[in-house]
Image (cartoon, rainbow, N blue to C red; front, side, top):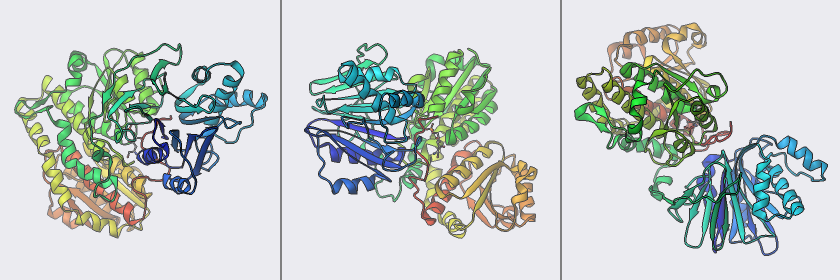
Length: 612
Ligand code: AGP
């Protein structure tokens, strides 16, 4: 949700910023812009559209400077046009700012500033902040960092900002509250960015800024302090461990396809050193100190958004089945604003790929304030949710760049499966059953490889359905969330309307939609729901719906009733949801490609939703 990058050093910042924006483009791609410090003024360029549009524009202008900032926007306030693009400048053009987040009291601040004669250029909330900084700086005689700090005290909302002033050209200021910022520490140069991806090719040494912190970059070093009281904070440098390769497409046409294929290894990586096949259990180091509370909790809440919420729903089935603990799964955006009956005997599990989703972060803060133990399942190491939860488990799926979540989802379900196994064994799951499940989990990588080695059937289905306007996905039990996730993948990247339903619910409404033009994807493993799902398939067949069946074993019944069958390897029924998700990711992918959609950057979406 908006990506920001800043450079402070001796090199020309422009190519570094443009490259950085390309790495951050998954966070928003409505417009892009950059500003550099010139000899006597700030030079800037900003354009509606993707980073490539800005890059072309940059090529046509002479723009250089060793201190600069850039932004790629996901529009909140004001349509995506050139004027609303960042950076924003104060009315004299002396101060430039890029912002990720939302200034909630921007209207009130704007009215005050307008009364004082400030003329606004854009419709954005962000411009208010740069005008406010300017007013304080030029009126109150403070240093530039002090003026930024004072302005931030007046702001309500969320921000990650980078800001610079032509009157103090040898420094740059960045600050965060509610939106992530990472400082990269190189040899005589500094980088500041929304995440580490623009930094990694320059330095692996980073400092994660915490909520309410600001950093002042100067030639002789950097100082981090708290915004509220200017208290200096000394923080450790962390070393980024993943390679540049992990954030590049390699030979794949899209990040999404690369990430789908990576699942051969990522699911195994998630389990490495944790799954204990011989004992039929798992060890989750990040939870060890809190195990008594986790084990004896009276209830669990799982809170998340989007795909992570779907993983949470699968987790509910597994945790209730194996550990016998009641689990409520709730959208974080709902959880945070209603009366929740939780206390110290509740564990609240927050699931998030990015670890920065604003609603999920707010939900865990609320849960904490009510005394619950908070547990994070995050992919991004050092992310806000990872740092704001009492304990947690990293999914270790590696950087996920495609906006549509794929490998992070299967990694989340893998962590939840291990948690269910671990807790189940502490309760009444027998060692024998534990070993069965753990063995099945240990084999997932091999089965994923089998699925990915032959995708002909999936591609054929995609070719024959690229013109349809709707899809239904139906599953039962633990596979109902798989249906939801299949439908979400399809709609977000191909723009085909799709709905997921529990298969038996179909006759309570959606069955009215069935005709010979409605493809229905049934998730039909040979488990205890098989006969029931078969009846639901009959119901669609009787109404001439087009039937696509995803199963682990072909049977005469399925062959008779289906138009298409996607077969995956036979597996343990509780591992099936992970494997079944992969053909559905591929189906969405191929349909989107055939329809000419931008798979990695679907319209209106952003990878990391840091506004509520
Ligand atoms: C997934 O394909 C989506 N783009 C989206 O629903 C995502 O899962 C959601 O925004 C939550 O993100 P998080 O996991 O980073 O918190």
